[in-house]
Structures are given as C-alpha cells and as structure tokens.
Amino acid sequence: MGKLVFGGLLYCLGCLTALANLTDLAEEPDWGRLDSFQKCISKGEFVRQLNEVYCPRKSWWSSWIEINQDSARIRKKADSDDWYDLQFLESNKSNGSSFPCFQISGAKIFIDPGHIGGEFSAMEGRHFALGNDEPVKEGDLALLIALALKSKLERKGAAVFLSRKQNQPVTDARPGDFKNRASSWFGKIKWMHRITEEEKRERIQKKADLYFYRVSEIMARRQLVKKTKPDLILCIHLNAAPWPDPEHKSLVSRNDYHVLVNGCYMGGEMAYDDQRFEMVWRLVNRWEATERLIAESMSRAFAQTTGLPAFAYKGPNALKIGKVEGVWARNLLANRIYEAPVVFLEPYIANSEAVYQRIQMGDYAGHKEINGQKKQSLVREYVDAVLLGLERVGSLK
Image (cartoon, rainbow, N blue to C red; front, side):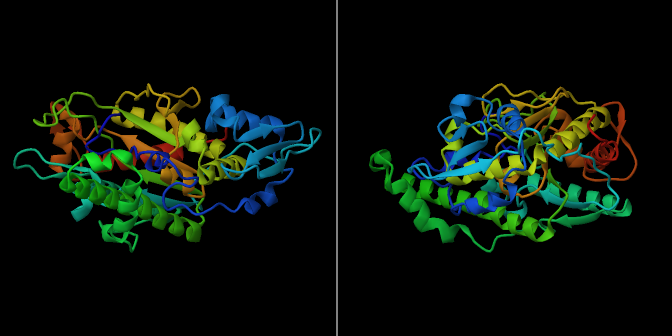
C-alpha cells in the first residue's frame, strides 16, 4: 500500500528488528503451552492450515518446521537445535472439530478501535488535514464507530467490550520510556555515522514513538483480551491511499474495502521465535475457520451496504483466502497476539474524494444528499455493514 496517510494496515512487526530472535518487546514463548494440544490435530489438517493460510510457501517454513508421519517438529529457537514435538492425532481418529458457527446473542465480542487518535494521531501517521477543514483522524473515527456498534450489538444480546473508550493510550508507557532502546537499536546500524546528529536524533525519536504507539499499545490491549476471553475480536479501521504528490496533497478517486484474517507469515517473520510460536498457537486453536467464516460474511455485507469494490493485494505479504472477494490473510501484530479469532475491517479510502466529504459531514441521523445520492453518515453505514455481516454468519458447509 506504500506509505499511507493512515490505514488499518499495520506494518508486520517482523520488520522492526533484523538481528534478534524475538520481535521488539516480545517475550520468549512458552512452548509448554502447546502440551494440551498433543494428539488433537491430524497431520492433514495441520499441513492444510500451514500451506493454505499461515505460511503458503514451503521455502518460508521448511527451516523451522519438519513434518513427519506422526508429528510436527518445530524449532523453538532460531540459533539452536532445540525442537518442540507436536504429536498428530492418530490417523484412524476424528479431529473432533465441527463447522464453526456464530450468533450475536450470547456472544462475547471485543471491539478494538484502531490506533489512538486525539493528540497522538499525527505521531501515528493516521492524521491529515486539507486547508481549513477539520483534520481527519482515523483513531477518532474508529472510536465513534466502535461506540455506536457496541450499543447496537448489546441490544441484540451480545456482551461487548472495548479496548479503549477515549482517544488516549491503553499502555502506561510513553515514547520517552523507549529512548534508550531506540538509541541502542540504531547503534547496531553501521551507516548511522554518516548522518548528522540532528538526523540521528530524529530517527531515534521516531523509533521510540513507534515502540510506544504501535508495539507497547497493542501489547497492552492484548492483556485486556486475555482478561475478557472473547469469542470474537473486531478491529475497526479505515484505509487510505498514497498521496499522488505528498508535498501537495490532493484527494484520490480510489475507494474500496477489504477484510483481513491472520496468516501469510513470510520467511523473515518465521525466523522470529515468538512469531513462529504464535502462528502455531493460532493454527492448533483452529481459529482460522471462524475468522474466515466471519470475514467472508463481512466482505459480502460491506459490498452490499457500501457498493464499494473489493481491494486486491499484489505483493507477497498478503494471501487470498477463500473464494469471496476482499478476504485476505496478513500477519499483523494485533491479529497475531490477540488470543481469539480476529477479523480486521478495512473499508473506505479516507483520503478519497467520496469518503473525505462524508467524513467532513460528521455523524447524523437519517440520510443526506451527497453527489445526487441519499446516504447515511459514514459512521452509521459502517455499523450497519458490520451488523449485517454478523447477522448473516452461518455454518460452513
């Protein structure tokens, strides 16, 4: 997607470190957590999920996972010969799994409004302003949508939890807490001596900011997920397109949507001990079936409600999942470490001609005429699409 003004597409955290076995700020995984999954998944199911969802190129996983007749051997540490043996279900026994299903009433739904917003929106790169218009802040919009969605879902019998209720961080940390770590990270880079001291300070500050709003913040939200133990997590985002000319911003014509599930761990990401464990953890929990079921229903609902076309990725960092347009797998920090089925929603291009006008109009009841068409507010249209998607979820058959 290039350098976006903002968009729910978080960078894969694997790119934040280059020389360590762990992703930045990650803890060493406890491989013993997999013990309860011994002989719980068949070889065929393990290999199917690995190849079709989580790591589609054998060259990406073959250095880290060995598939034997009765087990999968998973390298625990990148720099050692220490392996975890996951025993497969005996071939003559059933997986014991059933087709996933979902209904709103009685469900525990965790809504994660993307980013922080407010005074932090510019730091996050999820903020832009044109002329004297009100700035567009993705975090603020995501929270408005999440609050409206929470109210509607609760009326339908769901227990709903929010990762945040205001445009403030969940984490107690701040950029200053990561200055030393950021400085140490850049200290390992050979070309740093070629830049000026001012440039060095700027780079260190941006790195410290990144640790704060992207890594520490998501990790703090993960703790809320652990306490809640939800049936489903919905990550609320809007997308954006690269500016044709970043120095002279002008709105773009493109407008589309897509929906993300966890998957497509690339070779460099598999080299991280924590990401490799988290991938296997999601695989043995079989969350991909629920994620795909709900993501496909969401994709159809957004297409119907908004009339937008589905976005299609072109690079290796995303994998098309299933036959429904607009559903893709990506390895993002939130959909990797949140321990439950996670569906990322990425509708609308905020810096498009059509969407920008609607954002500036704010939230309102009923319909207003926009370019000759009667339309709801963007907030309410988003909420209606999500509700439609959840209401239409049925069993995979």
